[in-house]
Image (cartoon, rainbow, N blue to C red; front, side, top):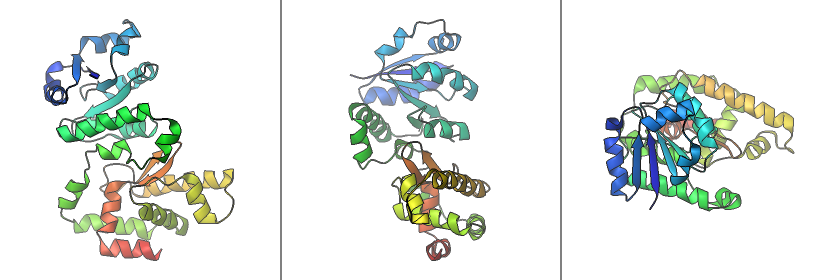
Length: 264
């Protein structure tokens, strides 16, 4: 049986997630006092060795999460951030930097939690090469508050579509090419080297990689005024880039936007 530690400021807010995990046959220990001891570093870290997963509750503010993460990074645990409704920019950055391994919410179903924890367990059992080679959707998209099913059910908003068209019209030729490469890849991660080679069609060097990073940042910035909940392009450090699934869905299902991107 696997053990889960939930660090929280109020154990009553964790009853729903605790019940779901217990139905999946996980032993769950929920503690507000241990959270306080961790932040004060007055508790021995030996306690963590009894757990495989540590969930940081939405009742813990971001500054406190920032203090906790260095402590948790020293332990052999998978760190999961629980949020109420929306993933913040800082949470998303933690995910990209691999400081946390997943983001969940009380709204996630038992099925989603089961797949989340199983996928996390597999990543700890596999070698780095096996992890690189397997066709596995990144966990941040698997357990997401922006689910593909929800996106398909959402009716298109003409005003939002206009925002995206405006951004795409203002992309440079290189930015448009990068966007096209990521759209073509779908939900797969594209390595930085692959993108550089397709753009410059020559041996990749440090200058190309630096230019790519700057261009990716500009693309993210241009989409910031749209309705996207997270960054337009997800950065998976050490792996590459992937298009935000919400943006991918919108482009693929809007004829006007899709045509512009396809024509480059």
